Amino acid sequence: MASADDIRDTVRRYVEAVGSGTAADIVALYREDATVEDPVGSEPHVGHAAIRKFYDVIEPLERSSELFTVRVAGDSAAFSFRIVTRFGEQSFTLDPIDVMTFDENGLISSMRAFWSPDDMVTG
Image 1 (cartoon, helix red, strand yellow):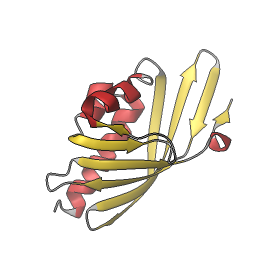
Image 2: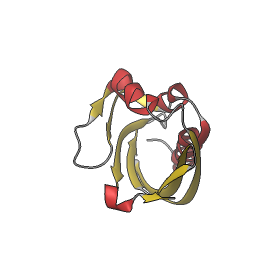
Image 3: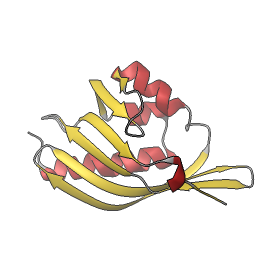
Image 4: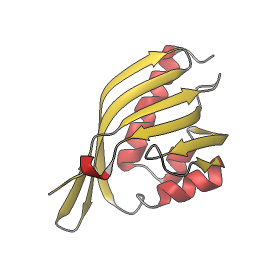
């Protein structure tokens, strides 16, 4: 099992990559057979190709992110963060709560993002 410090480090790198990295940067944090359910209740994305396609959508956007809190228990972490995306003069702010499981190498095995369209703030 990955250490709590390794898990916290992966979470930190994930939030940074979502805020300013490439889709490839994000996918590199996932196991090859990982799953992404974002938001919870949507059809999961399974494997690197599907996960990359999911994150490709945000890559060209101007964006930033901020990690608020992380809780690690066993091979899992729950954390809250903010992502702000900008498109022209319009901004979109979302504060999801993500729950991830990790393998023994600290790679993400699964990710579930808790949020709904009602949580999106536009400005």
